[in-house]
Image 1 (cartoon, rainbow, N blue to C red):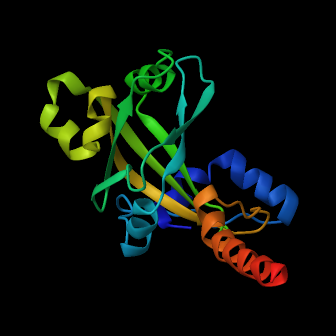
Image 2 (cartoon, rainbow, N blue to C red):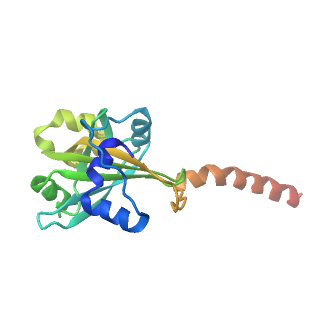
Length: 196
């Protein structure tokens, strides 16, 4: 666990729970500043085509939203900065409203086939895409740009790689196609031989 993540996550009530179940808690840490993304985190982020983002409402309730797009749609602007284009959707704007009231977000990025997950804590802001066309061009594929309504920017505070235990491997249709197509060709060859 990165130093800042441990500092933020290990609250007094978490420390008490650790003491209750394990007889001791992790030592308190103080990190001098945010944890910067390394090449490993940056490569992982750029390879994702989806993630989950949590925000908190003004009434204190958490809200989790799935975000998806072309691989790499969550852009790494620097070692402590992420951004993505947000498109027309169901018009609820829950994440957008929550960020306006309180800027804290948590991102949860999964790689199911490799059983790997990355958690990111940060501060987000939302900008109206109509006022930033140059950023829309930077953050969205050309064919998707007409649907961009907002731009999300996230200042990364910290991150944590989670253990792979209990992550069920799941595969995309494309992942399966690369395995199945050679088998289908081989089956067709064998069926042709049997007909002869």
